[in-house]
Amino acid sequence: MAFGYNRHRLSVEWSRQVEPVPRSRDRPTGDVKLTRTLFIINFDPIRTRIRDIERHFEPYGKITNIRIRRTFAFVQYETQEEASTAVKNTDKSMILDRVMTVEYAFRDDDNERGGSPKRGAPDRRRGSPHMCSPSPSWSILKDPVRK
Image (cartoon, rainbow, N blue to C red; front, top):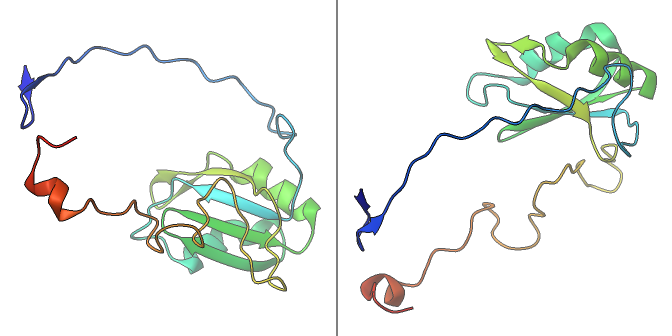
């Protein structure tokens, strides 16, 4: 089928699903450092509020900090043991009809340094503050043949 301005050929095919490697719920896989901060993804970013996350995670220990950033969140516990208990009990659990993934953050949230825990997220200090790629210049848009 022809597709786009230049009428490129578009091909659609079935994909093969690769089975994920099973992991133990008792300990993390690989070289994951056990931290007090958890990284949460796949919750509903529109409807989920801090209070919803707090209610879901507070049975497993004293929460010291919760941050929601776009489509992911961080929950920090007072101790690493509380965080471990929370990972074991909340990974693949549901919050507002969505199955979340809960993992250890790469590092603990350290408010003294003003940083936030990172887990592969782009550094906002480099590039666009909106975490988007820059828009193309108008001269390129006016002349679609230009390479």
